[in-house]
Image (cartoon, rainbow, N blue to C red; front, side, top):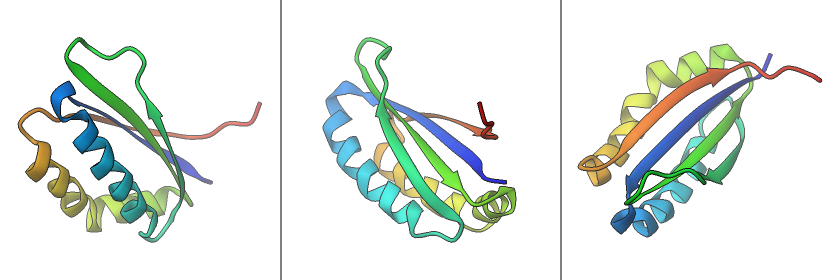
Length: 101
């Protein structure tokens, strides 16, 4: 069964354009990893003052693919963003199971 891996990030507004450009490339890199099927990028509408934020929802083939990502790739993929934007980057992650209506 597919899973959704959701990452919500916020950065200082002064770095928002730079971060968004980086994020688009990062999402493409994530989609090249095994098990990642697609992604949706959304802007947060309820940002805190002085911040900009986005939510990325990745659809993965199954929980095994997510576990493989977390074990084999997550530290490297997260590390690049932290190295560039760590001084103001806030991230929250959660795992969701799609349901039919």
